[in-house]
Image 1 (cartoon, rainbow, N blue to C red):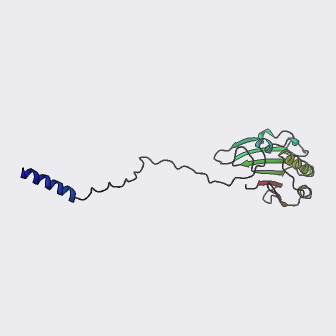
Image 2 (cartoon, rainbow, N blue to C red):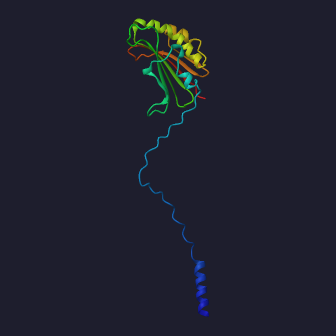
Image 3 (cartoon, rainbow, N blue to C red):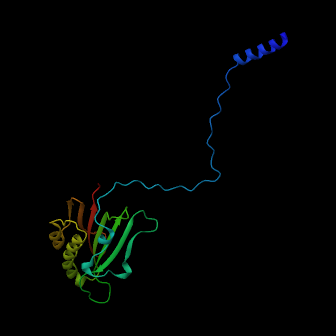
Length: 197
């Protein structure tokens, strides 16, 4: 009996005097079996004001139908984060069946439902009829601004007629008119950039 009590006492004493069991080792992150391809995370661009819907901003009905070979409907191009549309319109008379003077419309946006940037580029290929294209440009620009329901800067049309570069701040953004000095032909660009919200 003494022996049983002694064994029980020793067992109880050793249980009380022993240190608590060590904490489990922290989990170590294991490398994946196969390396996953990198995921491109687009930078968050600030939201911008709308310059109109793609249906409005991608058309110049006052100039008739665009050239079929130039038409790109509102879509994301391969490898591009932006939505884009492109349409090219004949502007002024032509000297021959060769390529005449044109107005190239390009609209872009990071968002599908609205346009954030527009470029209207007068491209002069037919020099004998360049004056006719230049005369038609102010009317085409006026019709475009009306079509997208944007206020036309009051100084813009006189600047276009005089071929004077300028930049104009408007509630919806900035309108810039300038000559493309890098182009081998006479090219004038009108850019409309929407303002951040």
